[in-house]
Length: 410
Image (cartoon, rainbow, N blue to C red; front, side):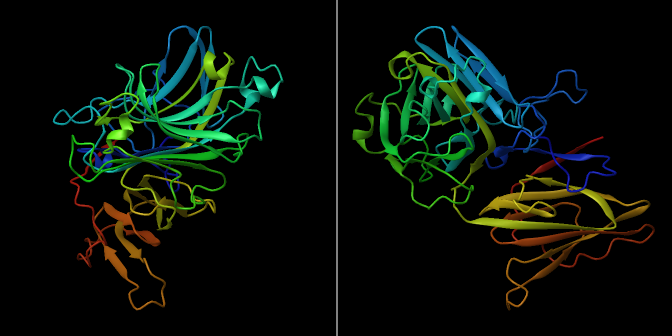
């Protein structure tokens, strides 16, 4: 996803967030730029030291011996694999190197909770070898966590496309150990809307004590409908501190690693048929997923554009953005109309205007940090040049004490 500005006319600069730690390793991608990586011929070629939360750079991982197709031209990342031998696997992970030389080159570790989710679709019309028989479209889609492509280890949340459309599905949490995936927990579920897409969410919960599986859990679920239609109960729930969890392969506790997506098939269950899945609306975040959403409304007065990170669309469109409860956001890089200059931010919320706790805060700082714990309206106001900046009128609500570095690129 390219960074989308609230109003793009007159844009002359954009803000990039350099993540100093795990919190702003969060990323989002809806593939609206029709690409999963930056064009090498683009003068703004991918630089791992410049991090855009809405435009992560994906790396493709292939298993030798199969035919692969990856494509994001439709606004979704399609991963297709046709196994020439026993097993075929095509994965994609966000490049995680070069963020901060003082920290590990992986993003999420077991010291803090984090989750990974995406809208997944199974579209046989994309398959270049599809023969028209719905029983021949096999394979699986998965979300990977604490993954290591070099050693083929980590955790996987798997959905099986192994049955004809409309039949019951299968979900499971697995230990990734090479091509062998011992299962921690699995279950059959009612059929999901594979052609139109469904949601998969995979969460790691931590007690804050790194290096120890006690106090750690893996949770996962899949559901139809809207992102926030989840019923709030994880159907898969694995206690990593339970010694029985590792009964199939003792000691497989993976403490650290990035997220990834994948599709794969094998001869045992997939009968050697091709595997295909597409992924969209990816959200990878530090924290706990909840089915509570929050709305941000952004208004401009005498300003032509501003930068918003992350820029997550709202079903209503227009000035609204929608976030999972607790999402941190950054607004900056206001571009005035004509010869005007930036004047102030006005933040309203999170309660209703008739609520005695309803607040209106003004702030003349150029950068605003908010945590979406409620519904907010933020207005950027510009004015005619020549005057001084108005005195600081109040503290921004719920400022994130993260020491975020903001870089501007001309």
